[in-house]
Image (cartoon, rainbow, N blue to C red; front, top):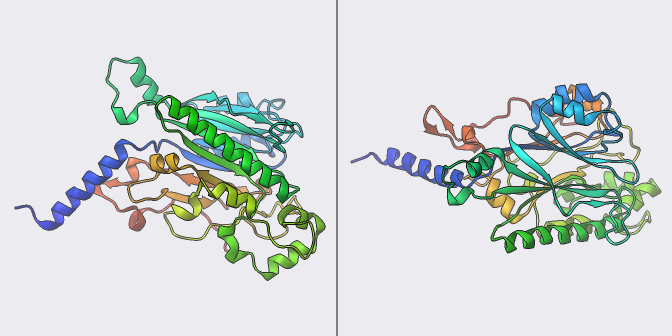
Length: 357
């Protein structure tokens, strides 16, 4: 008879393979507000995007089209989708050309549209893994679990001025997500949706960090009161409603599926510190997933492989935001020398440098 420990290992291997069969898990995602178009696109692609990202949501891609970003992206093997916004704070989605087909989605909305009323806008991109496309044009039968798997990326940048305005934007974002899900349902599919970007809002999940010291800082500036409080008054309280609305149907992977079980790091300020409204350490950049995205891209143990705020010498000076990086599941994280690896005890990130200040 097979020893008990070997039986357990074989069982775990079976479970992992079963879950991986239906797992999208084909990209590493980052969300990055690069500040006013970034400072040196070539360096940004070379030092950051090429090294850390397969899919990137980019905020403040100002003048990227004029500055030749599409050509630069192509030279670095990325596809760039760009939404030019009324205030010039453009929104971009970068995708490595080798991994996915990218299509502009039908839920893209430009800001200052009276009917939809987004401050900047929403860029909707639909990603389909390239190997699935190759299956479709070949004679090889496609397994049922992998047919028509797509990921919908919603890249956005919410209002920096008013929590009340962001409540409206959050409600409209959920409406867009429900529309995407309903349209997929009509086709007999389930839509995996990832919402990412600079949401300019504080989360109730971070309430432990919103202490009296932070409240004193927020109350000292009328613009900070307007941005983060229920009412633009110094004696008001933090308005968590914009994030609560989103969390009704979306999951914050930094809390629910973080492998390393550490609390999320702030995404502002950096040493660059160009925005007076980044007056204290705060998390205002997010990656949120709908239920189907969680089911599709979370590993067999219920985790995104690794999520962190990338803090290093480059990101400290490159922008007034730190980038948020999510490493999504891949078979290589579960196997080593033919043995199953439990991610919690074995996975370490080779590229993370954290500040604790």
